[in-house]
Length: 155
Image 1 (cartoon, rainbow, N blue to C red):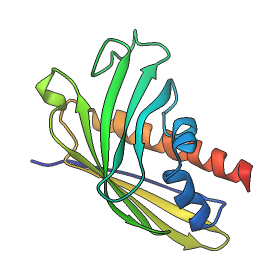
Image 2: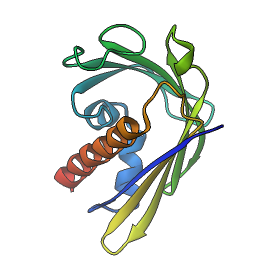
Image 3: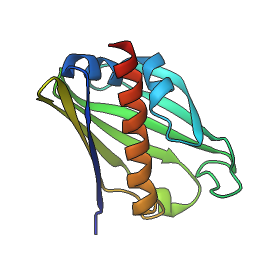
């Protein structure tokens, strides 16, 4: 059975600003890695049918080993749909030998104007069973908090 994980947050920036941070290489490297990780984008092609490859490195891998190696998660992400400034749909595949991380997870980032800001809702479908739901939702929430800090500081 397919699992769906979600998180949302209101960010004090207009949808166009938030959307821009979702499709800018340097921005993604700054805000996407959740707490306890840093990220580096290896490949970048921000268009429908394009995508990116990100290497996420755990700052301390003793508590939570990586999916690709002891200290890393490598993920290939394709842009399935881009609707400025409303929606980004990504298809993510983890590089891992463990079959519990196999498959393609879809991440849908929906942006809706609310007052002077943007409500960002992230829905992950077909989440691989090796990714714990509570940890995943906490990671998404952490990335959303980083995104808020990033775009609000720039506004």
